[in-house]
Amino acid sequence: MVNPEFTYIFCHDEKRNFSVEVRRRFNDAGRYEVIVSTGRHELLNMVKERRAGRLLKVALLPMAGTPDQNDNIRLLAEELRTISPDIQIILLVGGESPEELVIKSGIRPYSWVPLSNNSVLRIHNSVKKLISEETLTRKSRRLKIAFRFMLAFAAASFMLVLYARLRFPQYF
Image (cartoon, rainbow, N blue to C red; front, side, top):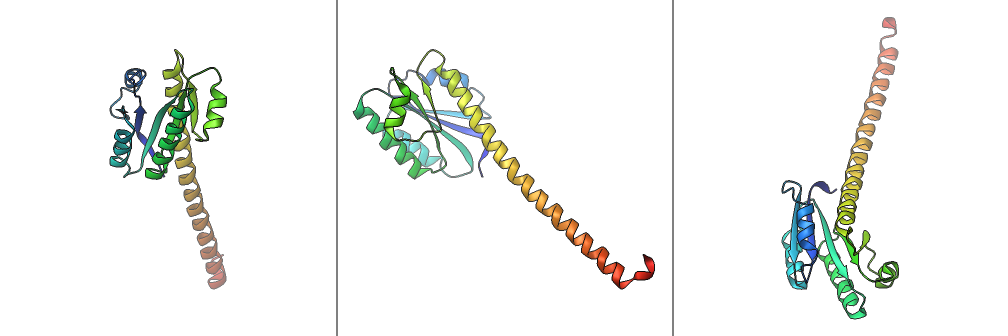
């Protein structure tokens, strides 16, 4: 299970357009670490270094309108998922029809964000939503385990009372 108390955010930003704003938005060093890479191999190496552990990892990948760049991003997303299967991908999509680009890419991202003036806010909301979902999943699992222990204790208590009733009927 993922521990959403600390989150790695990997920005693949070749032109360093949005990475500065993302760093400003996620400035809490105790909860987030924003890691910016300008190259594909640099990003893959950073993910390999941080793949151990139970931390939440998010990759921000920009998509342009050209098919060659989209194929490169698709291959990068596949490599990221082979290195770290629990990584979540958020696509930053530019162009006039971002939904069509996401569907044609075949990446299956966690979410996609259109590039605009408020894209950093949308990225922040997507990351917070992801953290909330992971927290709810973790708490749900703990609740199920606690409920099973409670049922086991209730069954053991019932069996003990039944045994005592049959063994010592004079006390009941």
